[in-house]
Amino acid sequence: MSSLSHVDPEIAELIKAEERRQADTVKLIASENYVSKAVLEATGTVLTNKYSEGYAGKRYYEGQQVIDQIETLAVERAKSLFGVAHANVQPYSGSPANLAVYLAFANPGDTVMGMGLPFGGHLTHGWSVSATGKWFSSVRYGVRRDTGRIDLDEVRALALEHRPKVIFCGGTAIPRTIDFPAFAEIAREVGAVLAADIAHIAGLVAGGAHPSPVGHADVITTTTHKTLRGPRGAMVMASSDEHAKALNKAVFPGLQGGPHNHTTAAIAVALREASTDEFKAYAHQVVANAKALAEELSSRGFSLVSGGTDNHLILIDLTSKGVGGKPAAQALDRAGLETNYNAVPFDQRKPFDPSGIRIGTPSVTSRGMGESEMRQIAAWMDEVVTALSKEDADHADTVIARVHAEVSELTGKYPTPGLD
Ligand SMILES: *Cc1c(COP(=O)(O)O)cnc(C)c1O
Image 1 (cartoon, rainbow, N blue to C red):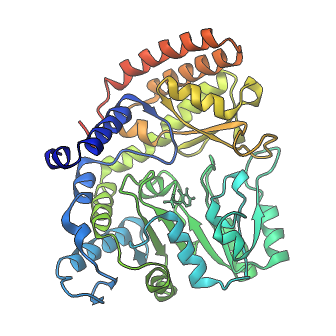
Image 2 (cartoon, rainbow, N blue to C red; image 1 turned 90 degrees about the vertical axis):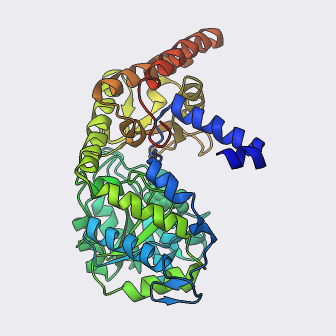
Image 3 (cartoon, helix red, strand yellow; image 1 turned 60 degrees about the vertical axis):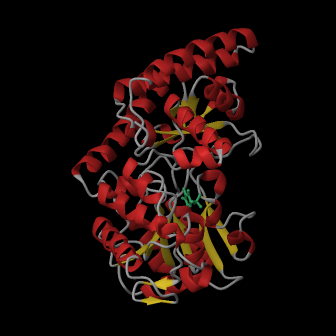
């Protein structure tokens, strides 16, 4: 980054500081990952200079000789990796990808359905503060109180009662396998379009570590930067060509102008990486690590929503530990363990001060850590949370400092993809 250091030393220094921070922490944020050096390189290219509104072969600007080839490669790789008939790689991120689905299949005021935010759904699945909750009449389903799992009987009853145009399945804090065939049956029964939002699990689906929605969902949306290990971006896919035209029209010109071509190229690179046997092994290790982490946390008295995990993600209810999610996440971060506070189903506390934390294994697995490191991480989390619950600030500081030193020793042994 010699040019950057010269032109803008302030930003260059801050980027270096963030590089060090990412290398020195155990990143347990379930929605994050480390991209490869190849993906980073594709992102920082002259492709950012080019406007290319439209689609390959049908653009509104000249000079698309190269961009058309790049976008076509990205589309073909997405189709082949996920086994879909249609893929659009232009959405700027996951939220606009979901907006494209509404634009393609619903009109303002129509009824739509998705998982409620406090139960693990995404804002764009019709939550009240989101445009999708303001412009549509949104119906929300949740999980069962006794199992912490999606109540498919409730989903079906709500769908029959409200007859939504679009049903979203998938979410941001769901530790269990999504039953795509069951959702498809409900959607078919009420004549709704089923959209599977696999933003969190796309890498697991690609690697064969989670069932695929292909052949069940009418539309599949995903971010490219979570378990898929690509740049910040998104895709809209479809099992068949039936809705291809409507989806393309919704992305452009419906919602967006020019695609971010540097991102498209980096998506193509990530999709190539995700099609390797190495990536399949990665996806399965992500799940094995999450299971090991969940088991160790459970055995240490942590209460896990739904009792465990099938995927990359664990939602911890800290009520039994006598500590709130926010102070716990802050103390863990001081110890070098990066998490986010999160509401748990039927949370008695407020959204800005909820009862839980959400953790995940995509990033630590990308660094090459395995099950024994997961057990060590659970032990550290236990030490920090237990120290915090004693309400003795000096004692907590001492524990946090010692854990931080041990965390640094561990992170020093594992290379950071993209950096080392
Ligand atoms: C992350 C996520 C999104 C939104 O992605 P952004 O890129 O942050 O807009 C949408 N849906 C689900 C389920 C997600 O987890």
